[in-house]
Amino acid sequence: MGDFALGTLEETVLIIVLMKDESYGVEIAKVYEAHMKQSISLPAIHMVLKRLGKKGLVKSDFGEPTPERGGKRKKYYQGTPAGYRLAAEIQERRQQMWSMVPKTSLNYGLL
Image 1: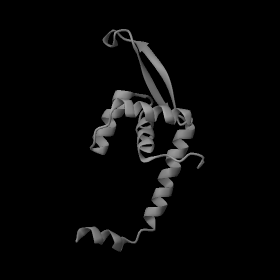
Image 2: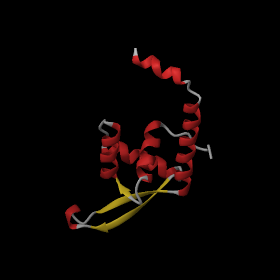
Image 3: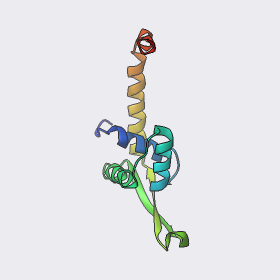
Image 4: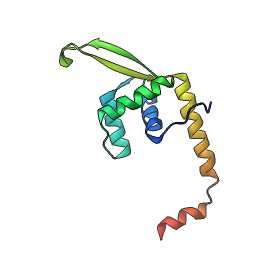
């Protein structure tokens, strides 16, 4: 599957999108901030979602117009099967690499 190299931000946003059946930008930003303990702008989220969409890893659809949004429609994002497979492959590679880290290495950070 290794057709695409993902940056850390792209990978994180992809995983957030995969957490639910569908998500929208503000919701993705809130989950990012809660899990990563740092803020992110909505334009940054949308830029990443656009890149993930071009790579076929997420897809989007518009919801119904709502009065709260002045008749505007929310854009909802969903992970694709390719997005799920790539995220799972990245996770598997990371787990393999972590399994090769000697447990004694963990002691160095405690000094």
